[in-house]
Length: 389
Image 1 (cartoon, helix red, strand yellow):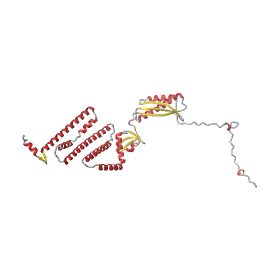
Image 2 (cartoon, rainbow, N blue to C red; image 1 turned 135 degrees about the vertical axis):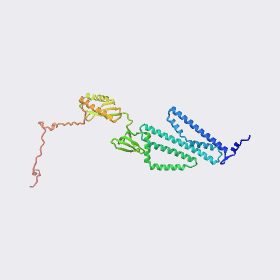
Image 3 (cartoon, rainbow, N blue to C red; image 1 turned 30 degrees about the vertical axis):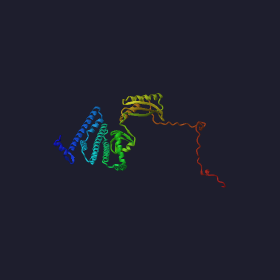
């Protein structure tokens, strides 16, 4: 059976030296490959969406977002490369096609990585903004920039290596240059990484009341290089992030309640019955306040001029103003109770005992003998006798 004229024409016709039938096979393979890739992408995205809906997982939602960022252009390039592999091309073109395969796949992985980094940074910002940490944009930008630079640097080096470029010397040059730059800007980089550490570890947030060294105040802003604190006196204190993290930071925001220890003393002439009753009086005063929780009250020690007591109680509200109000109320209550009990608060006193003169130093009549008074003499009386006058 002889072939039809159309089939004979296809078999005999060439385009740019390539048989037309081979081009048709390549085109069919290209369309089929594109359709298969598109179908596989839709199936994977659909399953990821179903997983996200069932488990309400952030990871599943991230996978969906990353897959939706697949480039249709790169999908078409891969399909064209599959079709080109069906052609009878010279050897040098086959090598180029294999290299283009790697380039296309690397670029798509780079795009997926960029989308994943963007999603991660957005969720990081949303999480910290929801917790009241509104000044993390600079740190998030720094983190995003660093991760994207690292991603594309790795992809670029991988592509160059696949194209036959010797990247050993290039990597060594980058290493030496990076060390030189790092040494030149080590102080700035130290502050930048300290800012990143503050954003990630969160030892404090904007609005927290902190005590760092001799500075006590409210955190106003967390920047890339410095942190600004509004002190109790009203001035703004600017501290380097690196120096800030080298010190012990007291953060009062997580404090749920405040433990108070205070002491007082009463005079030594207080009767023992009243000394014993004072802890009960203090306990009654503290338990009369709903915002306070009594811990203990003891007659602690014998002071130099007082009988010393130590009292411990808990303020359920951590606000400093509430503590001062409660302490003032307790102090006033103690003054009233002690006045009713006729008990006096002690204050520093000193008793001086003056001893009488010894009996041996007294005269027979009980009076101390009079001291001999010096008698004024003349100069002649005082002069020594001279011989031979």
